[in-house]
Every structure is written in C-alpha cells, then in structure tokens.
Image (cartoon, rainbow, N blue to C red):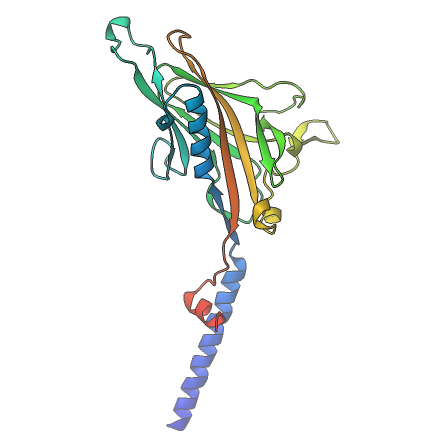
Length: 266
C-alpha cells in the first residue's frame, strides 16, 4: 500500500513538472503586448473649441466609442455639419438645411504586439450629400515623445518622388471612403543601390518607447482637414486641426496558464 502511494506521488509530481515546463514554454512564445490608448478628451475638446470659434455648435463634434458609427473597429471622431445645399434637384430641397456625418479614425488602437508601427492608417467616411472632405497632408504633422514635429508623408505606389515636393491633398467626396497609410518624413531614405525612396524606420518605435517614462510614451498625428460645400455655394468651408494623440501603456506580464500565474506569485 505504501509503495502504491509512493508511486502515485512520484507520478503526480512528474506530471506537474511536465505541465509546468509546458506552460513556461508557451509563455516564452507569447508576444508581450502594449495598449495604444487614444486621448479622446483632448480630441473632442479641441475640435469643439475650433467649431465654436468658427460659428458652429460644439455638439457637431463627438468621439465615438468602438462598435459605434461608420468605423466601429475603434475610437473615431464624428463630425455632423450642416449641408446648405445638397445634390438633389432644387424642387426636392428641404426648407431647412440637413446635416451629414463625417467620420475620421486613426489606427492602430488598443492591444498591440511589442513591435514597431511602420505606418498609421487614416480612414475617412463621408456620409454627407454636399460636403467635400479635403485632407491636407503637407500641413499635417506627426510628433513623438518630445513633441518635435515631422511632416506627414502619405504612402503612394512607387514612391520615387522627392520629399521636398508638395503632396496632393486627398479629397473625399460625398458618400465616399478613404483609407491610406502615412508616416513621417524622417522615416524615409534613399537606397544606396538605385536611389529609390523607401521607408527605413518605423513611424512609432513601440519597443523603444515602451521602456520610457510615462510622459514620454506618447505620439500624435495632427490632421489638417477642410470641410467645403461641394457646389461652392450656399455655405462656407470649415478648417479643422484634428489632434489624434495616443499613449503607449505596457500590459503586465501574465502566465500562459492561470494556475501557473497563481503559483509564480507565491
């Protein structure tokens, strides 16, 4: 009887050691993650103050949470602006101007692997009927850590251009959608072989920034956009600076198996 108990004890100890080693092996393969947290308070307050100064209601700008609006994947900015004249025939025009929604989003957001971000994705959905959204890339900027700014460079096919040349603005017409990737001008260089312009550095070096002190773990993309009446009549354009600011928050390390996590804390 005592031998049987001893055998069972040795068996369970061996099984525990095997499971523990498997858990450690799985944990070693898991990627450390961070969370990219957008500063929704400063985004909403800044855009609202700009709208008020231009004679529009502050409620025209609202930050939408994930699963809301036309871009439900993550936090986005909704702009509901009056449309003085739609594209419908004159006899179908309402007595009062209607309103159209414009949604702007910058990705990535939320949990992210401890890997560099090579480009920021800008998405714009224009659900208005008579307003154009014009994104001015040359007047937009990227900043990191110390708030030192760099001009935004939009990725285009076969980028053989000179960075000193002006970029064409992106125009999002009514009921259209824009999705494009941008970086900053200091991320690009020319190949020593063929002098072709190519990206040589990430726009956000997350592994490096994640180890910095809290105030330095931030970056931002300031987008300059113009909302202009499609017909150019019956309304005035709105100029806005959309400050999409993010903070990098490291996630605490977790064991692959909850039981192992409990044991490691003992």
